[in-house]
Image 1: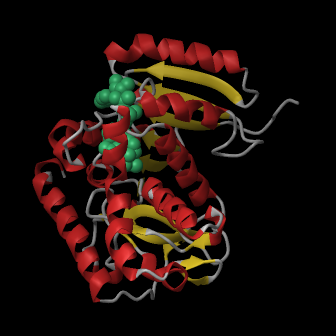
Image 2: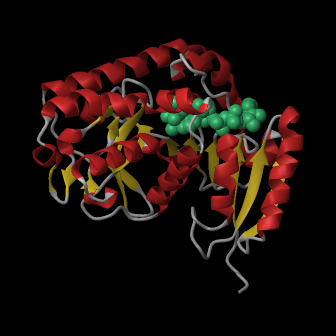
Image 3: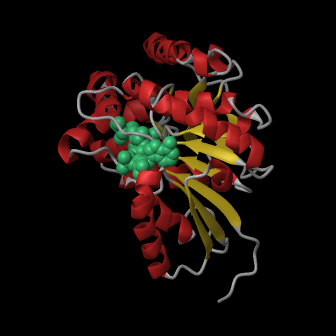
Length: 329
Ligand code: NAD
Ligand code: LMR
C-alpha cells in the first residue's frame, strides 16, 4: 500500500548508541507517529560513530519499512535539525556504576546548548523536543535556554521511564494489569530524588493506597525501587537501560500527540510556570494531560506533608543543578 501523506522529519541524536538501536526501528515502523504517517529520519552522531551509524542504516534499509521515506546521517547540527518536527535528544554519555546522573552535567551539559541553538535556527515551526540524555531535566533547560524563538511548551524531558517502572511495580504488587494503574506520575527530577506520587494514583479507579494497604512499603521500598531502578540496571547489565528507555521515549511522544486516556495522566518534565509553587523555568516532572494538540498540567492535586517534603527535595536538587550550569544558560 503506498502512502501519500507528507513525511514528518524526526531527528534522533546519538543514533548509533544503545537507545538509538532500539528507538529508530520503532519510529520507522510507525509506532511513534502512527501507522499511516511517513517519516524521514535525521540521524546525528559524532564523527567517530559515523561508521557504526552506517551499519544501523543498513539495517533500517533491510527492514524495508514502508513508512520510512528517507534517512539522513550527519555530524552537522544544521543538517540534523533542518525542517525537523520532532527532535529526540539522546546523544550523550551514560553514567557508570556508582555515579549519580547529575555527575554527568560537566560532560554532557555542553552538548545541549549548541543543539538548542541549531533547533532554534533550522527546525520546522512546529518542532517539539524530547530530551533523554542525562541529566535530562537540566540538559533540556540548557537546550531550551539556547532557543529563544521556540515556545517553552514545546520542550519535554523524559520522566516516562520512571512512570512506567512505578506502574509496573504496583501492578505486580497487587496482581492487576498495568492498565489498571492510573494517575501514577513522577514529580521533579529524573534522578534519585524523584517522587513517584502514590497518593494521587488509582488502581481500577480506587485510591492506590487503599488497594496496596501498606503505607510503610509505599513510603519506603516502593519509592526507593523506582528511584534506584536505573542504577540497578547498570549494576546488572553493565550498561544503562536502553530498550525500556527507547520504549519510554516512544510512549512520551505518543502521549503528547494523542489524547490522554480518560481519568489518567502522563509523566513528562515540562517547563514550570509556577504550578504547585515550583520555581518558574525549571524543567520539572509534572502530571500532564494532552488533547492531542496541546497539553496542560493537572492542577488541584493535594499533597500531604510527606509528599510536600519529597517534592521540596527534588525541587532543591533541580535548583542546584540550574545553579551549577548557570554559565550555560
Ligand atoms: P550510548 O553511549 O550507547 O550512546 C550514546 C550515543 O551518543 C553514542 O553513539 C555517542 O557517539 C553519541 N553522542 C555522544 N556525544 C554526542 C553529540 N555531541 N552529538 C550526537 N551524538 C553524540 O548511550 P545510551 O545508552 O544510548 O544513552 C544515551 C543517554 O540517554 C545517556 O545520557 C543516558 O544516561 C540517557 N538515558 C536517559 C534515560 C531517561 O529515562 N531519561 C534512560 C536511559 C538512558
Ligand atoms: C535510567 O533511568 O535507566 C537512565 O536514566 C539511565 C541511568 O543512568 O540510570
